[in-house]
Length: 265
Ligand SMILES: Nc1ncnc2c1ncn2[C@@H]1O[C@H](COP(=O)(O)OP(=O)(O)OP(=O)(O)O)[C@@H](O)[C@H]1O
Ligand SMILES: [Mg+2]
Image 1 (cartoon, protein in one colour):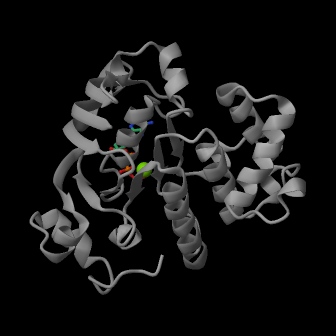
Image 2 (cartoon, protein in one colour; image 1 turned 180 degrees about the vertical axis):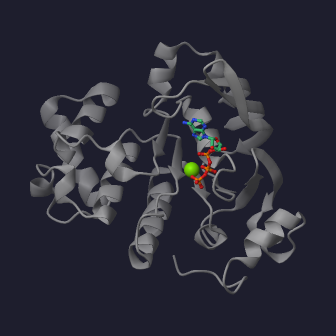
């Protein structure tokens, strides 16, 4: 479903060009769960943003290569065509939930908006679906909570709301960028379980990004290891766990307590 070839990403600042993704290639099949692992600054978020064709706020990026989504090169689409893909076909849960939610709109309004814009639902139909979605991601008393503002939710609940927004249009691919980093361990496990359940129920592919091998164990089938803007190793997760080839992968795995035991996520 997704075939990425020779992808490069370059930040342009005051005439200077800084290449942070170096001609990488990867694939994600329909319905497949794929992990991206690497230390901070290795280029995971920029790679994920490439698939959404979104530069970080306030920065300018030049993308290169091809991102074929169902055979269509996303890098060749007009901004308008890309707007239809974003949210509707490919959705992303960003690293920082507070920054991704609008503080002056209720969470219900934010989900309604997505549904009215992308799914052509009326206001009343959208609200009905919004309440269902909030229930689906495990928010209790969703009818009432829909009228609350983001600051009235806990960190874990905000992450659930973001996931509700991301899956509202039933995308083919959900990108989750460190969806649990800011959360405590118990809540992390709940959010990961939620992502797995939604992936199964909605038949989505999942691109799960993390710096922690422990997080993706038992979550994904295949993994790409990123270092310094390059993919240094890839393969089936079990193979990689059992016999990592690249020294960088070995070092990452050595940082995971008790390799080989699967977290009960
Ligand atoms: N807005 C920006 N302007 C300039 N350089 C940036 C910007 N955002 C990221 N970078 C650079 O791009 C490279 C890749 O960053 P990226 O955010 O993709 O890393 P990451 O693997 O997601 O790290 P983390 O695990 O900390 O989230 C880094 O060298 C970083 O310094
Ligand atoms: Mg990141």
